[in-house]
Amino acid sequence: MPKNVSAIVIHEFGTPAEVVRVESVELPAVTPNAARVRMLAAPINPADLNVLEGKYPIRPKLPGVPGMEGVGVVEEIGAEVRHVRVGERVLLPAGLGSWREAAVIGEADAALRVVPSEVSPTQAAMLRINPATAWRMLRDFVDLSEGDFVIQNAANSAVGRLVIQIARARKLRTINLVRRPEVIEELRALGGDVVLLDNDDAKDSITAVTGGAPVRLGLNSVGGDSALRLANALSFGGTLVTFGAMSRQPLRIPNGLLIFQDLRWRGFWISQWYREASPAAEAEMFGELFALAKRGLLQTPVERIYPLNEAAAAVRHAAQSQRAGKVLFG
Image 1 (cartoon, one colour):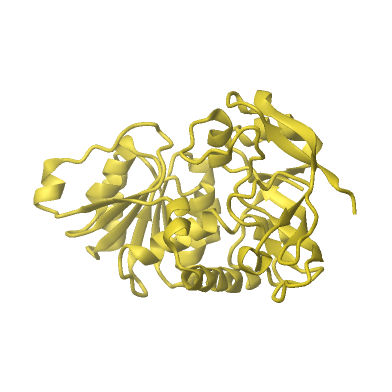
Image 2 (cartoon, one colour):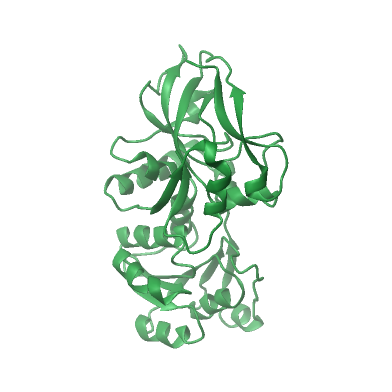
C-alpha cells in the first residue's frame, strides 16, 4: 500500500477557501496495535469552518489536517488488534483530522467503532456530531416521558431535523420554530408535530397547540429574540439548553423568568461530553444511534460530495446558507 496519501492541510487560520491546501502526507507503518483506515466520507460541519477561521475552541496544531468526523474502511491491522477486522467500516476517532485519504490509527481496538453494515457510509460519517448532540440534549437535561413536548428553534438545521427524528422515535412531541415558511410542510412530513414561524405571533400559537400541557425542555441554537421566545414558552421549572448562536446575539435572561418561572439555563457542547464520557456511555449512545440509523430513522440530507482535490470549492459550498443538505468529502 502507498505510504504517501492526499490530505487537506492548513498552515494558518483565515478564510476557509483560502487556507485549505491539498498535500501529500506520509503515513507511518502499521504497528502491532494499529490499523490503517481509508476514508470513505467526511462531512464539513459549521464547526469545521470555525476551525479553519481559528474561531473554534479546539484547533489542530499547525500545520494540521481538519475534519471532526468521518467514516472509513479498515485496510490493514496490526498483529495485536482483536476487535477490528479488515474490510469493516469504522467511525474515525475524534481529533484525527478526517479530511484525508487514509490514516494509521494507534490503539485501534479502543479508538475505532465498527459501523453496522446496514448503515450507509455517508450517514455513518455524520453520526458523531449532530445526531449525538440531538440524542444527548433530549436525554441528559430533563426526564422526558412519552407525549411530552420539546420546543426548539432553527428546526430546519441539521441538528433540528435530528431532534425531530429522535423525538418521534421516542414518542415525544416537538414544537419547531423556523425562519422560512417554505420549510414548514417539509418538517411536518419529517415528523415535526408543530411547525411555526419564529416570530412574535408564535407565542399564542404555542399556547393553543399545547392546550396548557407543560413544555419543560427548550433547545436553542439561535440566541437573541428567538431564544427568548423559547424561554417564554417553557413551563415553571423548565430548562433552556443553548448549543449554538446562529444570530450571534447574546441570551437575554429576564429577571421574571428566573424569579417567577424558576427556569434553568444550560449550555451543551458535544466535544466536552466526549471528553468526560466513559467508554461504556459512549458505546451505549452509539448503540442507540446505530439502531435508529439501521431502521432508517436518522437521515441527514446530502447536497453534494466532493473529492479531496476540490477542497476550496467544497468549503465555499458548505459555507452557503439555505442549502438542501450537507456537503461532504468522499
